[in-house]
Image (tube, rainbow over all chains, first blue to last red):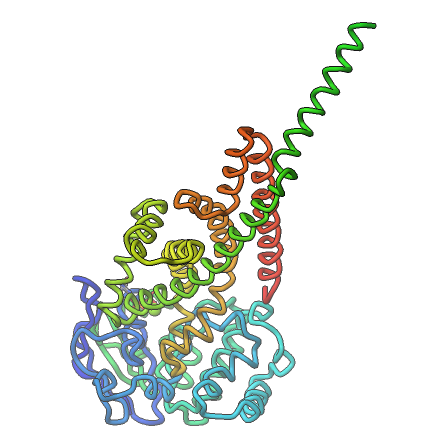
Length: 240
Length: 243
Ligand SMILES: Nc1ncnc2c1ncn2[C@@H]1O[C@H](COP(=O)(O)OP(=O)(O)OP(=O)(O)O)[C@@H](O)[C@H]1O
Ligand SMILES: [Mg+2]
């Protein structure tokens, strides 16, 4: 579904991604781990085209997303993204946040979108918040709304960039559980996270990055119980 | 007794003179009409200039932001930058004179219209900077969240960035309007009968500057203080929304 080919990314003179190759099939849940600054966020942002590549390719469902003939906005409709800082729209109510894209992109009528939004809000247990503003919600609630906002587009794949890192510890589970539900329902996911319960329960593959490279990849079992490279061993000893 | 009498006389005299001066300035020969005309022109010029300024300012700001973000509109962006630099880098009075004496030098044209145009063009440069700053004050995450949902640049601007930026933009625009209102006095230099020129005309008839200048100063003050009250009311209302 997603193929990353020899992806390189520079910021000025700084090489942040040094030739990433990655293939994600439909239904996979790929988790990316690695030390701060190794390029995890940059990789995700290149995959949905928010960040322009220096060289290499990102192919989504057979289309080179950076090709001139491809409408990147159409691609992004099919790739949901969830950010560490939620990035809800503070001037819109919860319902308005969720329905903005499908309505303005004329994918749904407003009535249908509102109906769908209510369904999603029921699913994430936040129906009573539908007319509130983001500033009236807790971090965990905001992040669940952000996930719902991405889900209403019926994405083929969801990208998560440290979705629980900005949350107070007691709110991690509500977001993590929602992600587990998505995983169980077969959603294709690429997740940057250090939330181990999600990784252990849901990841079909774990990728360890360091310094702009993929150093090691394998099943959660391979990676956590049988790490091969010294750098991964060192990283795991720090995380634990 | 005589002393008291003298003081009384002086007081009466003072009020008599003041009244005479006021009478000469305002009432005699219907001179107040100059002030009314001046006030009218000042308000008309400021109002229409700020409208022109907003139209130009929004266009220039969007062109420049689009260039900064998406590398689009290269040529237009160059022109927009040049425009902003020229306007901000030359005295307003000179811009007014160039437009009046050079650009419209050979055509017969309503001078108030020239004023509106010149002040509007001038204001556009400052308004564009206000709007640009307003747009840039919005966290980049908002733009990225909009993009990630499949919205394009213009939809993200329209539905996500500008509605939030307006909170910062409107009060600054109000202040720009106040500045503009005062700056229209520069128009006196090319003979636009706005408030300041009106007071000058009256004073040149009476050879008495006191009332013409003071009255006009009070009018400016009433306008600007009233406007800034309005702006801070608006600011309070805006900041109460969704926070
Ligand atoms: N817009 C940018 N301009 C310049 N440098 C950047 C930019 N974005 C990221 N970088 C640099 O690229 C490197 C990788 O950043 P990235 O955010 O991808 O790391 P990360 O693995 O997500 O780290 P973290 O775990 O802290 O989120 C860092 O050194 C960062 O300073
Ligand atoms: Mg990151």
